[in-house]
Amino acid sequence: WYSGKILSVTDGDTFVMQTKEGNIRVRFEGIDAPENKQPFSQESKAFLEKYLLKECLLQKTGVDRFGRTLGVLWVNGVNINLLMVKEGYAWHFKKYSKDKSLVDAEADARKNKKGLWKEPAPIAHWDWRKK
Figure 1 (tube, rainbow, N blue to C red):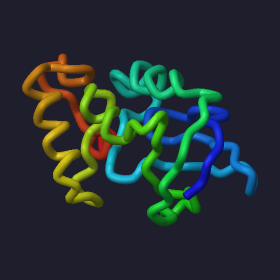
Figure 2: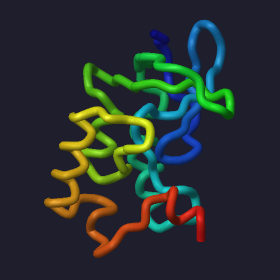
Figure 3: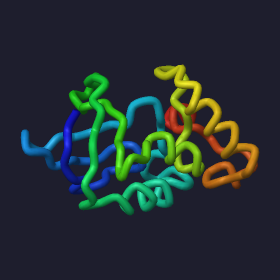
């Protein structure tokens, strides 16, 4: 576990966190947000920016192929990874996660047309990148 503050947000699933061990670049575990220049990317980034400079905890789950720390972000006891999906600011990244709570959160966001699900057919970033 790391404790600290979010210093900057790259996009809706990547940020820099200041910890007593030093600054770390973090990628959310189990979710995927729209890429920069992709529809709804700015809204996703802005949602995460609400947590800038707030005290937070990061539950480290690993390291990705780019050397970023993978983890689950907690602010005031709230799982922000889950909240991003629940509010429609990110997809559940099914390729790398089987987390049932993320499955249910995405289904609920889709059903209630929250966030990126307001669009009739949002294109997941892994498909958008291929184009």
